Length: 58
Image (cartoon, rainbow, N blue to C red; front, side, top):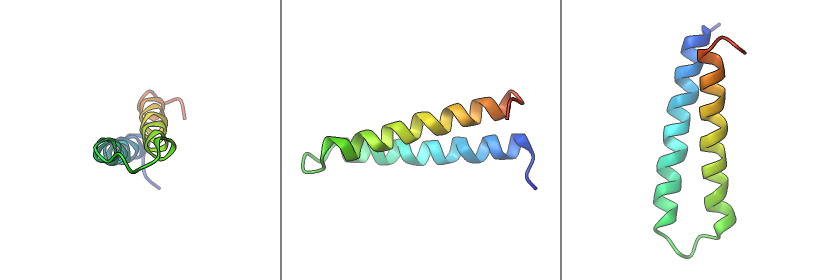
């Protein structure tokens, strides 16, 4: 099983990917706002998980 630090890094990388997707979608006006906001929400959730894991709280 992966250590907490490895899991934190994984969540941080996933967060970066979600953020990059959000940035790309922000440039496309045909994409509904709810879809764009979903990627922003996932970015924040994964950053929080990474932070908690990094602090040893999960």
